[in-house]
Amino acid sequence: MKKRFSAHAASHSGSPARIPQCAAETAAAEPKAKRVFYPFLFALFPALFLFTYNIEEVTLAVLPVPLAASLFLTTLFWLPLRRLLRDRQKAGLLAFVFTFMFFSYGHILSGMFPKMVRKAVYAPMWTLWAWGLLFLAVAFWIIRCRCSLNTLTVALNVFVAVLLLFPLWQIASFHLLPENPFTPRIRDEAEDRNLVRQMAIPSDQLPDIYYLIFDRYASQKNLARFFDYDNDPFYKMLREKGFFVADQSHCNLFGTYLSLCGTLNMDYVPDLLGQVPVQKRVIYRMLQNSRVLRLLKGLGYTYIHLGSWYEPTKVNRFADINYPGAKLTNLAQDFTLKFLNITALAPLGLSKYSHRESVLQKFRELFQVAERPGPKFVFLHMLVPHSPFVFGPQGEVLQVDDLIRRPVEQKYADQVRYLNRRIEELVAVIQSRAKISPVIIIQSDEGPGKSETPVNSLSRFRPKRRPSLKNFIQFGILNACLFPGKDKSIFYNSISPVNTFRLLFNSYFGARYPLLPDISFKAKESRTQVLAFKAVPSSFFELNGRIRTGKALNPRRPDIRAGGKKPQAR
Image (cartoon, rainbow, N blue to C red; front, side):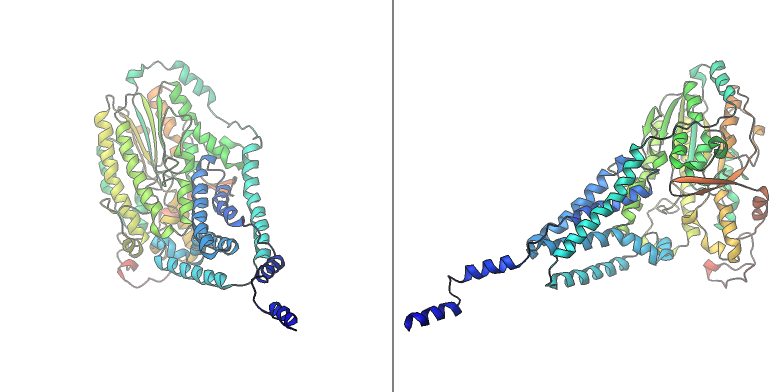
């Protein structure tokens, strides 16, 4: 009886002999936890997706830094959670949610509040706090969850792996598949050969040539009409220094790569291509190995390239000397700036401060270039007064409150005012350090674009009139040329950039290039191709050029920015 009682008690008690057996049975009953790969794979996706979206403009060299940074951030978040929760599946899910929310913040913000983001330039901080609270709520639910995550882990592993295949396939096919060879159609090709063959000017008598591009600098009339800014003192200064300023000039194409490609190849891009659609990379190659570059190098010039962080002009592999727009480790490059702006770091404004430093660095480099011996052809592309707005009228750093409070018109005009002072200083330095009076061409590739649109000025017009006026503003440009020793009568007020270098070669090297009609085009584009071109009729510029707007030109019209009542729409 005692033995039976002891056996029965042992069977119902928590005896040491029974505990290991129960633990083993429990472990056998529970499924084995699946390995977690998807957070680390997904960390690579945002950079790869952004790369494929801009694949025509960027090179593979821009990928390592953002990929390594994304992977490091996800790992840094996952490791402490793995130790704290002692559950790698929950830690993995939390890391995935964190990575998704961190890299989707910019997309969500611009989708929900496009006008607010465009006005503030810096993303408002309260949105980041709200996004953080949402993450904490999701994280709390995941931590409290007692259900098995095996099925979800397997599903996410497969889903993210398949998701990653799409950008990888696009990148591989773009860079590995052979390209169709393309040769641009060049008119006056015989004149190119004659120019180089008959050139007899000694190199020590050749003037330096500076081609300075200030992106999205508006024409004088458009600054007065739509930005309420009088740029006459700047134009007067240029004329006093010997420049001819074409105050009725329009760009031949809107878009930096299209506009510069036409100017540096001395022809219209539609005529150079012959047929469309065409891949954008074809035009990038034509911009890099341009006709002007080949001719000037054949004449004995050293080509010095000062690029911006915009990828197509950042570096030119055909240049003799490169001052890159940004090093691969620098935030101030096109791909990195776009990458930062989609993340939760956007409110910190890191990309804006990097843009500011990039502009200041270009001025310092140009002062150094002016001291180099000639003959030299200097190409500068500077993304100012192009947004973001990072300079006050005296060059000061703008605070977030100023960016939110000030209208686009004022921020753009302030940036122009600061740039004017720096250009005047730059011209003086170039002229003082040159042994032979240099040729200086100061142009903008295009007028103000979407991010510089004078929304307050345009709000005074009926909605159906605004698209036409936006296009008109985009075509009006700064165009000033200094050709020392040449009669200014060779210029005319409506000369467009396509004729700039034709006139230069005719004036200094005895060429006989005919001047082309000054025609502007609009391009229809997809993400990777230029699909079509359409000539803009001259009547478009005549009609919109007669528009009267602005406080200075129409004193009876109350100024909205000053708190006046909005006038009746026309």
